[in-house]
Length: 327
Image (cartoon, rainbow, N blue to C red):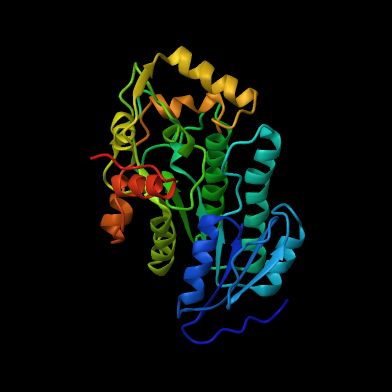
């Protein structure tokens, strides 16, 4: 086992899933941070960004070599970001990456004796149900969604992390639950819905959504690590917008459709792999049922100040996609 060498006040960081827009922003901030002496990362894709302090190795999250490498490095902090975000047709492969990859990461944390770890989950882990409290707090139960695989995977991973944290109280372990992440570099599973020429929304529900800026996701992660936050944290600005208001902001004509039509539309476009949709029909519950979250644990107890509101975040995403803002 390599002997850990650490300057006083300096920390080393290991990142799983170092490619992608949020990961690259985290790497950029670690490069700038005086407290970060060095960081390492892995992913199946090589990141586009280059870092002065960062070292990258191409590796699968389920590779047993991950445990060996982390054990040799003995970083002070591990941030687990290696997940499949946008749904894919092969749900078994998605779960293998998300769930089994998290098991492998937890094994690396344990074997290396890491004392601080942060796992990136999702607010979708609460499930989208008609009887959800509004807003959802961290004390509310995680209810695995029966059909939407991404949310179900996140709920399973959170269960694994809860068991691990109970077994290892000496580890400062935190979980972040971001709502939908937007920003100038975003192209995710929900952005397509607001970029169609015609605005679509469920006629039987008044849906409100929250959007968190990519910079606030990274800022929250660093703030939680810096303040030794433990347990789960909802990551979302305090405000929210209705789907109608989002479409109006883009100046689009809007048509309301009943649930059965919207679900079939989602299903057809997903099965036919049409580029207008990036989610299966099982995601539709997150369009019609509430899953707004309360941010008072992060913003109140821990004192994080969000840089952007939901509305500002949506406006930034629209401008990045060359959508003119109306009003």
